Length: 379
Ligand code: KG4
Ligand code: ZN
Image (cartoon, rainbow, N blue to C red):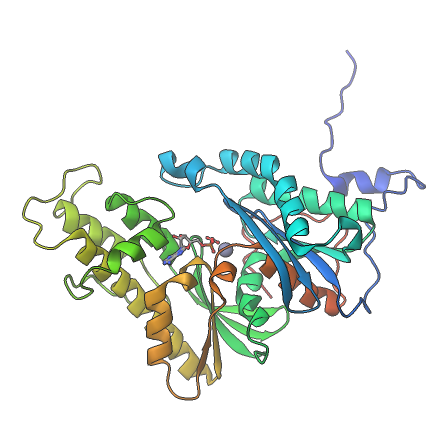
């Protein structure tokens, strides 16, 4: 029988065997700066369930920011299904990139570089965006740069706050992450305190299911909460024993479940008949409990570190109560910087922003750029 060698799927594995003169230049990185001052960078993000692309001119000017969400595709499953997510990215990524270019009034041939999220995220999803970015960078013969998704959330507010500069602290609260980062300089981002269980956005999503609201849960719980009394129910504000500035949200989520269904209640059990407050009150009280913790921990971290700027990022940064409470409770001299709504949740423009920062530092990636599901080390 013929000896069938195992096919090699990794570009890394292919590289040493690629004969000279193929022109593929897989391991080559582009030259460091100077890039043009008004450099056009396309940013692509497919790390989870949003297919996103945006175009940036120069270090901070956003020309477009297009997102195709997949909430409808995952709604029936109570969470993001990785296989469905990566297939949907594959179907949509080219069209979303085209839309971003059209909205920006930019031809692909005018682009100076491509930035793409390569970590952390769902592996299959990340691979779709990275493959699209590699193809474009190769076809256009321009630099490719792999971006850390959380670093991009940390820098998103820079687009609209011209005077914002390092060092600053960043609170990133999204569906997959909730942590406070010490942003010391471009690419010098160190996690200080993080959640030991659920992320804040994940909690909003799960409570939305309990209240029969649509996904994403954050905006729907928040909308319902507007008509409720945040003091109606005292849900727990959990403290983490070993790190008073860390987060824990699984308790508040379970407390809402037990409040609605009775102690030890199952998710599919009917609601308590003696519930004496409205769903709007439950939503408002839950939202207040999560916001109180986010506000207290991040302002305590700012006080401990003695920095002037607190940047907020991630989908939960769009929460109105969080924005209002942080602004109201920040002590004098501390500036809280929120990105505009379109830059809070996952988007391509923030990837382009962080990519432009990396290019300015002379950082580019080779065409065998890999993806990483965790990418926990962000420095
Ligand atoms: O940053 P993002 O788009 O994706 C991740 O990286 O996870 O964040 C999405 C999360 C979802 O959990 C969503 O429910 C939450 O952000 N979110 C909100 C709000 N808008 C989005 N949470 C609370 N209030 C909001 N207004
Ligand atoms: Zn995100």
